[in-house]
Length: 334
Length: 278
Image 1 (tube, helix red, strand yellow):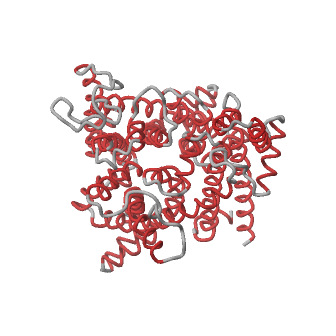
Image 2 (spheres, rainbow over the protein chains, first blue to last red; image 1 turned 180 degrees about the vertical axis):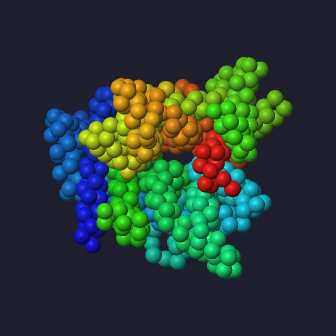
Image 3 (cartoon, each protein chain N blue to C red; image 1 turned 90 degrees about the horizontal axis):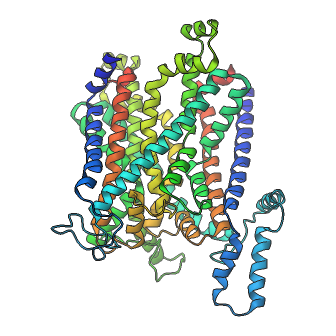
């Protein structure tokens, strides 16, 4: 247990350092843009206003939020201390909404969509992968290229095709949004039903693409395991195929947990864009609109939230690994 | 080497991958010689359906979809290859020097690598792209290349460490070879096959990264890429008006290019990693 504590401490130290670097990049990169973003944004927002006083007030509010009149290191200190107070500033595009409020209302949709989709595709992909490795021959020769091809389709590209096929051509499911446009989120049955209907297409478009990638990794691990001596021994003992597959699955699935961590990472990249295609009210759409509106506080907020999510996911998986995987346990003892 | 070469082409997967890739490459090279239409010229009506002299119809700006597809495929491929080359070079330099030198240099280099493995490269890609106000396809390739090196660096480092104390390396050390010479002459040849495979995967992921940031509206300007075609198609709601010819071809093109590259990679993997040879 002592070694485990040591393992934990070093992991925690690493993640803290990584987080600091992430916060710094998040702060620095948007501020490298030439020109003053505040004046461009303010002139856009105030284009209809005639009252010079209120224009000036808007400008000052922004400058204070952004702290642009101070040297860069001081700005960084203010940014960090604001973060500690849970303050990510005010959105430019959706002024005067707070960035944290916008993020809080959209993260629910993203997690609600992506987490179940990733878990379902992970389970289905791993089961298919071990089957493909075990059955081999014709089955594998067809399935492998199919898996590989599907995993090469970008999830948002798949999403566009799904909308066209199932929403426009076949009219089976609604094409966009998280719920019917004439509804207000409320805990009623009809609202829940509408959410479920709108859930279908984005969910399946993420799951289907995810299956390809997961099954490939699982197939490879299983082939590796199938060459192990214990499988030969099981065969000599005359064990049933289904039993052997179960053993192989158990042994091959552990490295696949890393695959789960990786897909949490790609949920951030690839599948977030899927939300844009469906105008799903999650983080992907928020980020997209923020970029279109040059809403820098909101962009920073999105990227920081996503990074934090990935860091936490990786950290939890590292901790779990330290507890489960005997190979790491041995390494800790050394 | 010759024997290795024959072995590579014995792998059916590699052959199929090469065949698909060569076919796509041939289209990209030959088609513009036969059809000199400017891919960005708006000659037709919005979402004009496919017809006799318009095999894939027109896009939202009334541009010839087929001409655009070929030009876009070319730019996307160039972006992928450039980004892959940059990422592989950075990864090689960091991985080789960290792995071979060891000590403090290795500690610093591998910490930096580990940090950038956990921070999603997509986020850095978005942040850098946002901060660059005018983007050519070259800057896009550069940015993608600079954000996708960490995995290569980590893998190269691991391989270098396992090679560091081999006899031939020690012999070179005793003979008084300089460090760069030992790395290039004695270590690099042994990981060359691996680096080649990593490069192929980097090209494939570079093409996907371009498509992803183009969908976010952060793609290159004044050019056509497969990602930009998809971006235009969704912005002008081609999928809602049933104009499948505006988005199915670029999606298929992206999938085919990355599919052929991945096939080549698995083919090579089977040759160089006999354990998974079935």
